[in-house]
Length: 89
Image 1 (cartoon, one colour):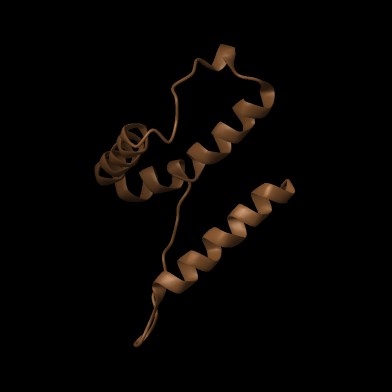
Image 2 (image 1 turned 30 degrees about the vertical axis):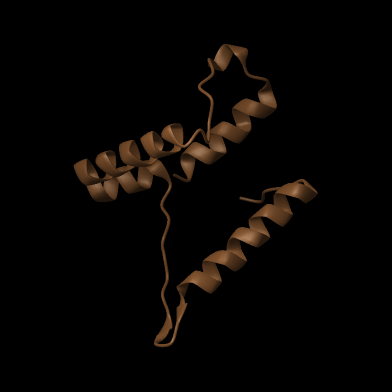
């Protein structure tokens, strides 16, 4: 699937990638992370996956990363962005 990004999103993604690379490079080599889409992760990890997703979402809400909104009050663009974000948690 090809994704098109606005310039500010591309810059943010590149910065995140560089921070991840720097964080996982150690004197013993590289550490790697793997990220699953929610549905894939829940199938693979079952109840542990559900607990982890719940923990991540609660942490984001407590840190004011998001403001809860009703879908009916969101623009089409906001709905698309939120769906993409939730898939990657």
